[in-house]
Length: 155
Length: 403
Image (cartoon, rainbow over all chains, first blue to last red):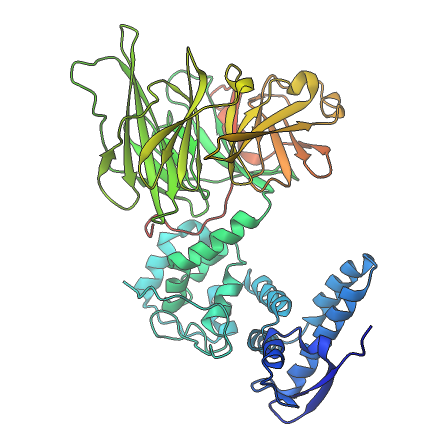
């Protein structure tokens, strides 16, 4: 096996993280810029601060390691590990989503989006507005009309 | 009407937070990600989300959102079916109710549908979860996921005035993938007292008001079965000389073609099914004796090549039950993997009913008792028996108003 190359990632707040290239390329964004030869060294990762970048790297490391393991038992362990990984406060969860989106890490984006979906499923409209910081711009009549259109869903 | 620009699901530069109306869907996350989250939710939850804000209502009502949502639904393995239960033991109009039947628990949960036409409607399975109802005069399209029922404009067949006799009709909903439109085919069969049979066909594009007559259809006989697949509607019928034949309406050209069936099935009872996106003929007369279900799958429409697929259930599937049901309705999983569902066609009062789900991969049969609160609704009519019919359940958030 060839010696793995290491790359250095630079978070938006100036912290450096040295990681194996195999881990870094879990991010298609980083993979593309390495392949195009346009990645500097260290590779700057704007929009992602050190706290979140550290978590993202932790995620990618775990998934790259699991992919190498032969043992099937690791699948269930990985699912459990993922479930624990997303047990964070909402702000961090949203930060992770944005980072996964920017870095184009599909599995992390799937995991975090599913987590949010599960989280909001049972919420009332008011709670949902709070979660996403939405202003209710309906007039009372409009809102009533929307409810009436699909009355059964509110029962 | 909102501009139909493509939404990029994710992009490095995409910090766009606005929905269609220009107002923020959420300042927290880009609209592409919000979409990615929302498509994972059940229809009922999404309908409630519509009252969160105007941009959210726009987003959820958007046909392209419905499209992404549908793609996920279709990719999922079916673990529930839509079941229609009718009381046919009474003369005159019969009560028909819909339920979601869970394959694993056997629980039948009612799906109340408002504004249903009269109870003697002929129900046909459409496509993408929609079903079609026709009671001879009125035709309706229904989306059980959103519980919407829409009545279609009335129309009559173009039979010559001198042709008289008893008439029956049915309607099916199909999807024209070329124009991305839903179309309804309505067929009338006239039985002349002198023994002849005549047929007439019309098509309506959903969302429009007028029916178009369909050119000469090679099928002029009473229909046995019909099914919709993307781009076409297939009708199974028989004639005394050729046996079973299938007439296919191509929804793009709105023209009929005839399809010849493999020798082995021209003279036996078959049903039309969809298997992995292909038209298939289900032949199940050897189920009780030989535990065998045979599917003839049309792999390639052009070459008319049918592939025979035999499924043999373990012998034990009948042994557990006291009285094997006289007839069973068979539901084939549309993805080709997952469970084949066998549900009794008739459920008798005061006897326990079971469904059998046969898993194609594991080759195991599971027997589950069917239960659920609403059965008592039928018994007030001194019902002795109920007829069950399964339909493919596809969660579809597309509103019939936005089709």
